[in-house]
Figure 1 (spheres, rainbow, N blue to C red):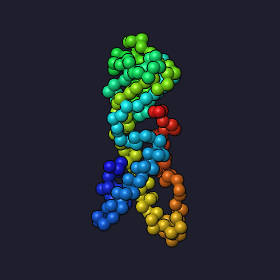
Figure 2: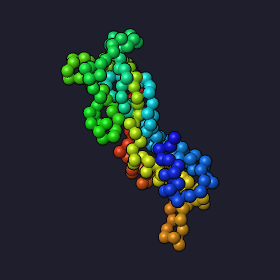
Figure 3: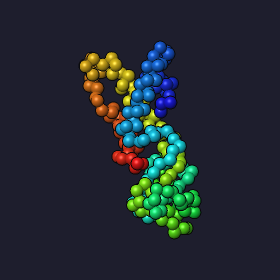
Length: 199
């Protein structure tokens, strides 16, 4: 399912019939992929329950991919390939940034709890195993709006001769770009990640 619904997209571009529904949905689906690649988010703005592995670069925290919740956290404390230590939420670890969920963002870090002197296995390759829900808690409204803008640009391009939209008579012309629509890119900027962490 795309970030913007077919009904939202059609309303935004003023299409009232169902003739092109399949083609319009295809544009939305393709735009989902474009947005995910631009923002460098492995699970996009949805969620997936997965087991992922991380290398802690500090004793007190480990950086993660976008994380909604943890079901099980285990560590390989002696680098033998066995995750023998199971951590307890709240007692052994807390999710961070602490206000991420309040702001509608995922967690990106797991910290040791101040109430218990447990350490992550620093520099043990893939020494942390996390089973949890990864991704975004919900699709941000800004992402929905960016998808509508970008999908409209893609939809309009099918009738743009030589990649040009508009005319001088209508007030100007716009050459279609191979990059993301400028307004969509601006809206998506706060949601971009520069690199993933899961191995």
